Amino acid sequence: MIIFTAPETWPFGAALAVMVGLSIVEGAGLMLAHSPSHLLESLMPDMPDGVEGPLGWLHVGKVPLLVLLILFLAGFTVSGYVIQSVAHGLTGSLFPAWLACIPAFLAGVSTVNGVGGLLAKIVPGDETSAVSEQTLIGRAGVIVSGHARDGVAAEAKVRDANGRAHYVMVEPDIAEQTLDEGTAIVLVRKAGARFKCIRNPHPELL
Image 1 (cartoon, rainbow, N blue to C red):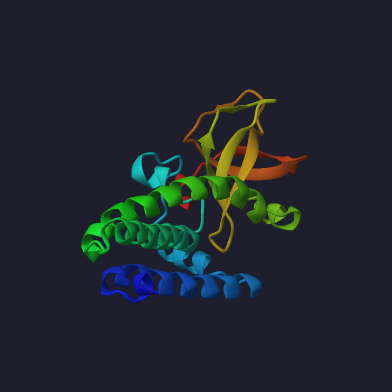
Image 2 (image 1 turned 90 degrees about the vertical axis):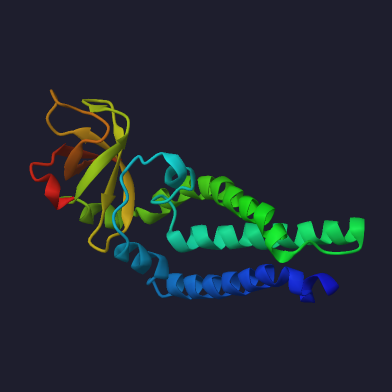
């Protein structure tokens, strides 16, 4: 018990409390179909699609922000207590809190990258239901991966009326067109499991 009550572990106790609180809030919001993550993301500036670098590495824009924060806090908390437990077992004392926070922070970031990557592959499919897909027709988006041409689909990111991001497969509605990655588009109709799209004549709508 000394590990959990020692002043050297207070950052990890605080992180645990925040994580539990956020998890409860997020869980309650999901049950009520009003996820706080969606509200938070609607207040944030839109992230560039296909973003690379630190934000892309952390899967920002692909996984709800609150979920990413919870993952970070989980990695930070668990690794922090493990580090202090190992230190206590080897030396009989604990590291100063600031020193233990350094590797714990790196572990938290790594947790966001690893687990967030797995969630990023699941979240888009969960967010886009058969009913909500029909409401995406007429919505603006951008191609984030691949080159769309007749018979070959690319992945596009489209936001619904509530600001929630959907990742869908698209082909150009005009057979002769090729739409490259980064092209602003508008969904015009559903064709099986894919959408047909055209170039967005008014990119400022995105």
